[in-house]
Length: 218
Image (cartoon, rainbow, N blue to C red; front, side):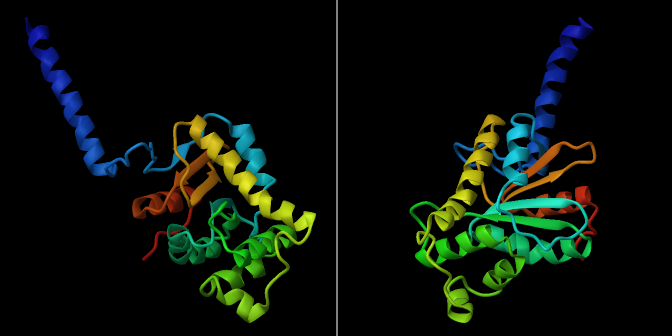
């Protein structure tokens, strides 16, 4: 009799605790998307993810600490916001921010494609810094326009490189049940597992800092 009475109570408490967790730790879900609002461990496709990131056209300041990969495109507002709020402190902690930029298919200017191709071909962090320090169109005005991305087979391949990496990573995310978002952030946990956070979120930033051993923003 006592068990029969307790069972519904336990079920109710379990459901209530679930609602409490969602209310405290999760944002309302986006229709059609399963978005991790806290850092997640990649369980499926880890080999493909490793190959895509490590062999991607990333540029970085070459710091000796842990690596944080960031995938995005130049006009991505959340990507820019993440850099403005996080990169300075990450660099102070010797985190090597490895940025992979791609030009969106059908939604990028000739100048953007040319600079993305230049980044992939040269792998120079200075080019990236210069491009990010002002509005996107300022770079060719100040530093001169690089050759068109379609001006040679090599530059066309460099342009496509970032897109291929983005697509491969998106495939891995889909295998794990998540839709691709940018910025897409990846780093290694202490046990070697790949960790991921998709998008820009204040709580997520704090958790990434904690996992990378970076002091919290004041």
